[in-house]
Image (tube, rainbow over all chains, first blue to last red; front, side):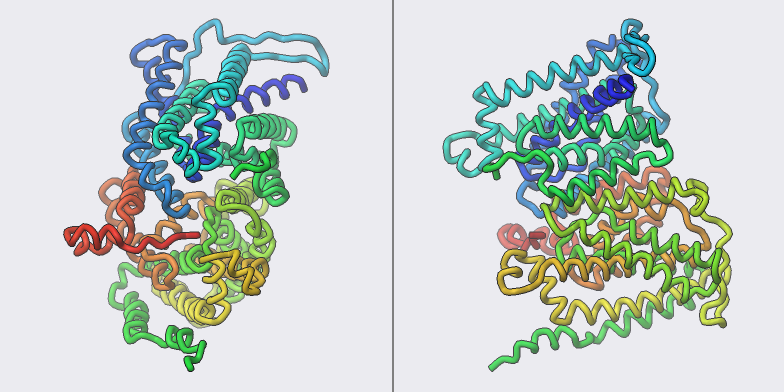
Amino acid sequence: MLTILFDGVAYGMLLFILAVGLAVTMGLMNFINLAHGAFAMAGGYITVLLMQRLDVPFLVCLPLAFVGTAVLGGVLERTLYRPLYHKAHLDQVLFSIGLVFMAVASVDYFVGSTQQIMQLPEWLKGRTEVGSGALMLGMGHYRLFIIAVCAALTVGLQYVLTKTRFGSRLRASVDDQRVAAGMGINVNIVFLSTFAFGSGLAGLGGALGAEVLGLDPSFPLKFMIYFLIVVAVGGTSSITGPLLAALLLGIADVAGKYYIPKLGAFIVYSLMILILIWRPQGLFVRKGGK
Amino acid sequence: MVNPHNPLLQARRFRWWEPVLWLLAFAAPLALPSHALIINEIAIVALFALSLDLILGYTGIVSLGHAAFFGLGGYAAALFAKHVMPDPLVGLAVGIAAATVLGAVASLTIMRGTDLTRLMVTLGVGLVMLELANKLDWLTGGADGLQGVMMGPVLGKFEFDLYGRTAAWYSLTVLLVFFLIARRIVQSPFGATLKAIRDNRLRAMAIGIPVTAKLAQVYTLAAALAGAAGALLTQTTGFASLDLFEFHRSADVMLILVIGGVGWLYGGILGAIGFKLLQDVISSITPQYWTFWVGLFLVVLVLVGRDRLFRPWTWFGTGRKAGAAPKAGGH
């Protein structure tokens, strides 16, 4: 049982890293971006291809996946996303679905539609078991690694958001774009860097998650709903909301699939609908924000 | 003194080209007998797009899970034909009834929250239906689909033939009936209140429109129409599969509507024709990667703007005029 909890936490942390960029960009720009999963997929493919074709070590691939997708995100933000910030939500939805379709078909074309297999380094394979009986806790080393990386990132993000100058600019822009611009904050730069950073995090999450979530061209469509659940349930005004939502989702999903495999993802979707009927703005909303 | 009913009455009048269009549509299976199957598909997709238009174009609800009703209607009709009786019209009514019930229940989920919340719950309802159809394999056949659906003749007279001519006329007739109903509805005072809700919900509430009730009504109505489209599809193909609930179906129908024009009933029909022909052409060139071109088309469509993309003469006009093309806001 503890093992399931542990796996759920690892899964939830991963989802958080994947979705936190989406939460910030949605809160910041009020932009419904369904193509976030495409960035995660890009990160995953960068890692897998570098490792398979060029034998780059796993730990070097992770930063590369981050930088690669961050650059990709930055370029797309500047060229394609920016004109759409003030358009209707329907346009944004159509646009990002279009991007997803293009990403899926291009990866299919260039890499092939088979599931990619990730060769983990030796020190990340294996598993440690603690305790016995019902309280036995089996920890896969790779999952432990995921939790450690994601926890470090979370703490770092929280620090940047609350303590640094950039963080306060970002929060000011989220709360009220016009006033922030009036106070001399260059909102465009804040948008650009946040979008790029969020995409980079998604890429990193995709790289980390390639082994756990599976990586094939339909990745953005398969996990789109999960990212959106994290954002919609967690709310977009802080990062603790999405973190808790991601952990909840991860644990519910792993436990649901383990205990009631017949129902599958049914539980997660129904739970999401119920939560959103109950609290349409998300579970963890801060008062006073926009 | 201007009678306030006049604009509504004027919009209700038929244009000269409307009967012509329908006559052409009904003549098409005769004129192009080898294309009757695709005409049937176009009619079904047009009906589906019409139902989405009621909630998206006229009421401003962005839904990503409209396939839930389409699929439920389809499965209900197929199961009814297989286990109870093969009469198509009764099956159609059963499909519509099932989708209506689901629509009435699901309408509770779209009342509150932002566009994002609505997007999520509609998507969620679609996925829940997909999971249900997948897991209840003793009833639906699961991933293998529901096979062996035999349909009786329409009205006891017209057998479904192999070339799909009966199917095409059957679907076209149903489409026409529902089109006329939808046309009557959107041009009634009820339709006007929907547009008021779309344009400004708060003001609509302030002038005394019961927004929640109207939303529930139109959502249920749209679900019924989508169920009819799904029922037509399974009846004319004799097969129901999980594909009915898939996400790409909801996305495609949105694309169709946007190609044809949102908030205009013929938009769904023209969009369906355009989309199916486009799909036919592209998938004959690259059968595997045609989604790429659909995606590219969507991106270009949004970036350039629908108004400009379909009016090539504005491309080289005075920059000011083309740039100031009116942009329909969704909220």
